[in-house]
Image (cartoon, rainbow over all chains, first blue to last red; front, top):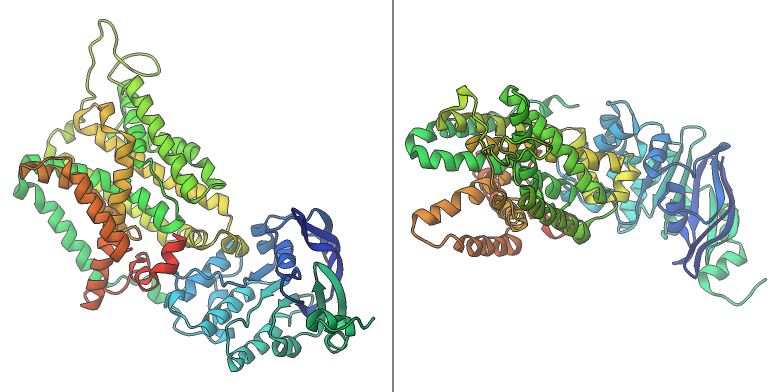
Length: 233
Length: 349
């Protein structure tokens, strides 16, 4: 479905993504790895904020890497950021409205997605929301229209364990429609294991493992990358 | 859309009505001199509104607003001397010419931001100061520049008959200024305003939600340059001529500073800025004080605003009115939210 072929990103002498080839199937796929592994860079490449020096990206055979970021959003890409990018001075409702009117979704989507995440007080400015409410609002924005590729960058960051649990069914709901790919980056391995059917693991810009979550987490190469154990190969 | 979003708050309507009554009642109370000053206040409040929208919504620091007033005035006089057109049409054309010029100046804004963009607009203002000084303003002559030469004596562009009286000119100016505010308010409340806010908060964040950043920045430049150009046309209407010394680059900086004092996040702030910018200097003059003292006053006001009231006087008034339950928080006034989260939001703005 989502295919990356030999995607390479170079920032001067640093190569945050090194010839990454990856096929992601519909459903929720976790993208994990140590700090600096290239996870956020990959999301930036997928959403068009970083241009790879080599490689190509297709979704169901369609090249999406030639689209500008805002056109990718209209095509069906939704994205949340590590540092949430809500418009703090706009109301909860208007934070969704701005997505609805710019991706061409029906007007009733505003209430639909806010109902889906259970967010009330919709005339409140986003700046007064709690961290959990902000994360819920971000997920609501990702639900607008007919998302095809959803990229979630640490949606559980800063949340208490109980609050992070509230995100599980919502993230799974994002992947409910057929042919929808959700890529989740998070350091909260409980959250990752709860929602991700597959995992892809990056280390120093290279893909070191990809497959069903349980198998990948048991992979000694992955354990070494995460825990820095002795060479087990 | 929720039904309550379009329902006007009766308290706000009462406030607007009160303002209208005050504006109408002013001329007989204050006399001819101050009626003229209030006319200038209305004109420069429109120019301030342009700077306010660019700053408060998109985070652009525009330091060429007074220069754009000059451009609007130049276009108004040039077209007015050339062809006889109804006054509103002349204003419209002045606004359109200025919109084109404003977009050309603002093109770097599609790639620049912050200090670099502010410097570009300041350099543009300095450039216009030089150009206005070199070519002057049209005074009935021939050629592209419309300057009278040789035997041809300079002439002023006559006001239309219905604007002969300064009092009527004041009412007319206030009405046109109100229309310009209404235009900007409608944009702020609508799709453009939401997109501007998203861009002002974060360009990648806006693009990720489908906002065409380039397009909405252009919309902002067109709208604010247009309204500022109309203000220039109104300014040129008063005497039918303009003087190049009225448009130094320094005045654009002063106007921006006054916008911050009035309030960079609401149109009320722009209205107050126009009042301060054009009203305080003659007030000092009448008090027998040195006119240059106004720069000190504005400087102190700016320091106060930046340090203790990032939303300016408008923000403080809005918070006071909300606290007294005189009015509900406005969707187009960011003051309350910005004050509550000033560090974070102002950083983005």
